[in-house]
Image 1 (cartoon, rainbow, N blue to C red):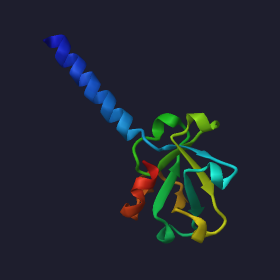
Image 2: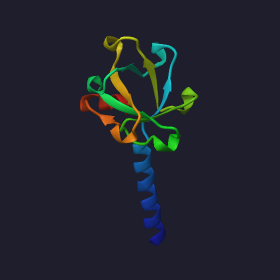
Image 3: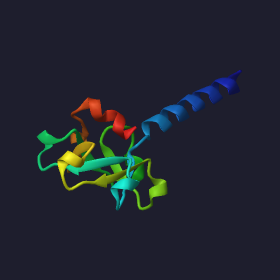
Length: 115
């Protein structure tokens, strides 16, 4: 019984960890047709749907909270994005911040784009 409880706790932890790691490892594609989400970078945080902090390590990018790690290879990413030149072409408008504490969603209706 003790082994079963231990297994169950580990299983639940693995499921929670897998869910929080979704969509925060991103790859920037060269072509919009290769992307799952088209992104426009705003000049001001007030214009953004999401405030993004670029993580230095993949382990720092967890959850769908705006902490992104840019992968070198598309196969390592959970989302492929394309940076558009015009905001009207974008699915999601982001603003890059220097502080991880500033990262987060401003427009909750767009949150499903990064799951």
